[in-house]
Image 1 (cartoon, one colour):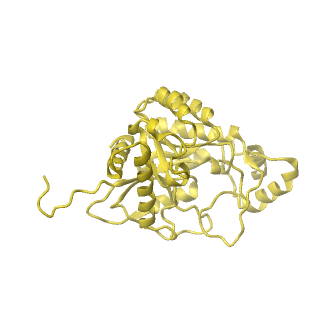
Image 2 (cartoon, rainbow, N blue to C red; image 1 turned 120 degrees about the vertical axis):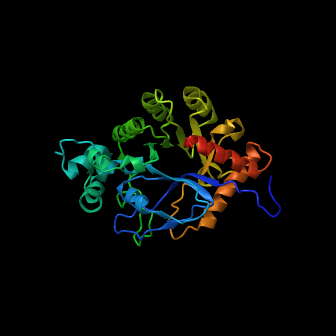
Image 3 (cartoon, helix red, strand yellow; image 1 turned 180 degrees about the vertical axis):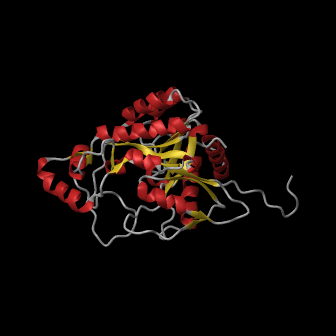
Length: 328
């Protein structure tokens, strides 16, 4: 029972999928994130943001909330890695092997290889340097059928004076799958949950996860900003893995462009629902208040469509779900 003038504890907000800066051109100053309102799962996509994530500090507070760190290779960065264990491929050979392009784009590709793209990283060398005692989950990982390589070689979330355009050059699905398989193997070896990216690869992603994760019941699966159908979610993902293991992290940015949401969330088991921003949370352009407001707006939208009595009820539900997802 609360004493007079004693406030009821505020249920934390949950950002189950967010990011830090990717900037290969310079070392960013250490950034301090607030951790007394939002509990987060921070993703890494590539070597640059993984290093950034390791140096991220959190404000000291008497009410510190868990901040989980994910290790991953996002499909948008998969072309930066090679699986050539003999290390015999040249830079040109590697990129021409893993990228799909039309002959009319050969000049663009040659310029990318010679002047823009970095030397590929042997994936096993990269993995060997990771201290998995500092890794809380595997993510962001997955497959993307729509992604095209940008004119600066890969997405970089920092300000640039250069105009960035998309090329018609894509990363082969075969290469994406090899990287994705390796990341799922790591999840199994270290018994770590996964946060998944999926654009127009619904069945292929599910099949690959079945091969690795079905026999590992301790590994939970977060479908980040899910864009498949409600039927595919219920009859494939949840039927295969059960609602105890499947979680949807819902964002204002992707899932609630329309006020009713991109799927009928009233049909989603409530124990599966999480919230996320998918924002770069250490950018100077994004404030902690902005992040809180984004999560609160998502909670309001979810409350209206689930439905629950209040956004506070939804907030409590999401936090309890997040604790279950992270086994805490």
